[in-house]
Length: 84
Image 1 (tube, rainbow, N blue to C red):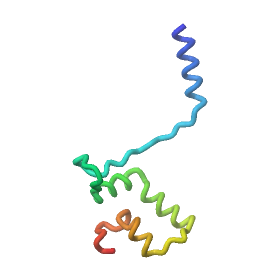
Image 2 (image 1 turned 180 degrees about the vertical axis):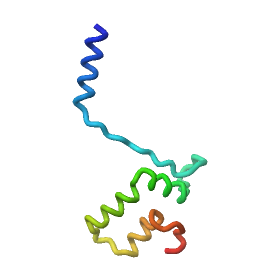
Image 3 (image 1 turned 180 degrees about the horizontal axis):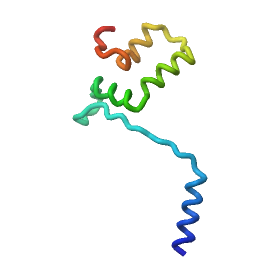
Image 4 (image 1 turned 60 degrees about the horizontal axis):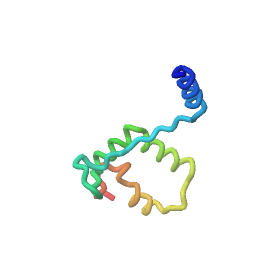
């Protein structure tokens, strides 16, 4: 009985589509509403999110002005947000 149930379970898993979720830890202290820009940027770069964002921007231009885009996403590209 165990083997047949295991085979059914494996068959059900084989029919599914795998999706991966990557959690970004915004700060090392686990404080709410606190975002460590360098730590977050390192994690986003490590999982390829920065490259995907750049590629998406090049592929699908938005109607957002450059100034608004930099205010919203500038920390992903620039090391020092104060330079913006």
